[in-house]
Image (cartoon, rainbow, N blue to C red; front, side):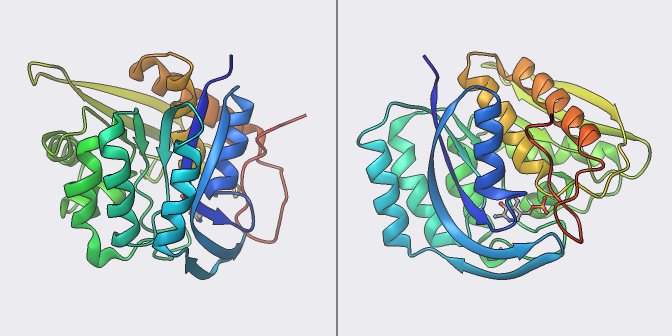
Length: 266
Ligand code: PLP
């Protein structure tokens, strides 16, 4: 039987990122996925034009409709436009003890704020402690921890702060790292508070079509977890899946700007 997952995220009209990227990734990897939409965005491959948060009470209704009926085995969280929606989701998910993959979507690659950054502490207070895996990129990890990123060793310190907040696993992705070698860093804490660090290295892929790579990666890892892989293997295979899609999507043209990935290459 296919696992039933749930993605809680924003809609991207260009379908490169957000709930649309999540759905394509989960489907490609063999999971059925319900959706709760937290925000509508008007955007295309050239940038984000406008953001309309969904009413918190309607997010509540969507979540109840899914959770009261469907056997959700894993939740993936992406864009949450504000602190009210974030707190509502934390309140409803905390008692359920379902594995959660949290992608703290804060700023788009084109520079648009996708979360009201005044409420950033709410991430660490309410959501980080209940997630199984947190997948910030380097900038998001720096924003969440209030740290200035100067070198790779700072990643270790940021990851530790987030582990201390209660996430058992933190993957800091390095797609924006300068240079030809990209490194993603997975920090994991065992029951005795020992910390294990794994580095996943891959070559830089020169492409204009990288929009939604973070959503795709976190969904791929989530889908692998829902199918029973441990977090280390789910991460390793999710990174390979996403890197292969990036490489095969170089010539995929969906608009005039920075396009998304072709999740179903011919
Ligand atoms: N729009 C939505 C709804 C998203 O969820 C995201 C990322 O998660 C983005 C835009 C930004 O995507 P990117 O930073 O890859 O351009």
